[in-house]
Length: 291
Ligand code: C2E
Ligand code: MG
Ligand code: MG
Ligand code: MG
Image (cartoon, rainbow, N blue to C red; front, side, top):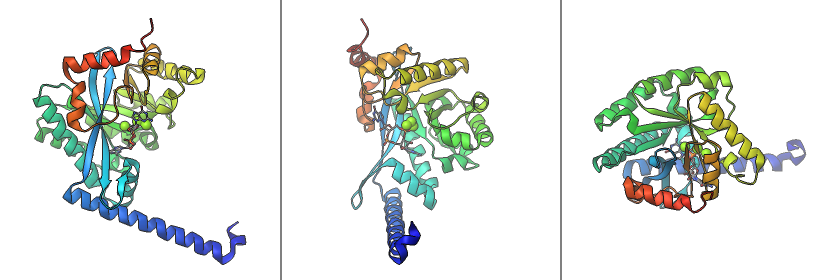
């Protein structure tokens, strides 16, 4: 088709390439500025564990609103940071911030774990486990204070390497989750070898619950499989109390999603901690409890 466009098509293509390179550079420049001078934030989304009957974990999610560019999605930030090498400093900033917050919550008596997403390139850094362990020691944090999430698709891109890095992290007591599970392609042989604590079932399969029988069967299947592999499960993107109870019935151990809360600044997510927070979460979920 490009041939029929003739020169005009090529020019249009070049112009749009140039525009996208330009946009990339602008985001890169502003991101670098934000890393140096502030502007990035972590918000935290609670995860409710059915057996513990409380919020045991909060996931740190990157938020960035730039004075020039406006709000930039975390996917876009990560994409640009990965392409331009900023990912090392951005990744360190996120980990450092999460550790500092975990320390503060612990000092306030909240036994909550902070989950941090790792980007593919960040996960590939050969010294990542040592860096994370050193950071945690600096903040006086036990391994269990931190959970790391890597997506299924990038763990499976190089399962052997993933295995080595995850094992090192696990030896230090750090919790490990496979994110967006069901959207990548794990072979069971690889899955059973990966050192992990939990699978996060992608929102894709939660969305259709309770009406979609296929989604229900898939969630139940993953929960069973996880149990066989001695892994816990978390359902992502649970938006209603009805969905929460259904995934529980399907054998899922924990839920995360708007039914409880969106990702919030640290001081706001603290309302889900402690006995009062647990009572609040249960009250929220009880609305749709089966009779
Ligand atoms: P993720 O790790 O799978 O995070 C879950 C995403 O689902 C978040 O989007 C969250 O805000 C959204 N979400 C949570 N509950 C619900 C719900 O009930 N309904 C719906 N529709 N959405 C819900 P967010 O914050 O835009 O982040 C998107 C992705 O960006 C994350 O997906 C993660 O892959 C990546 N990301 C975010 N922060 C970081 C970070 O600090 N480092 C890295 N490497 N990646 C990050
Ligand atoms: Mg995640
Ligand atoms: Mg996820
Ligand atoms: Mg997801």
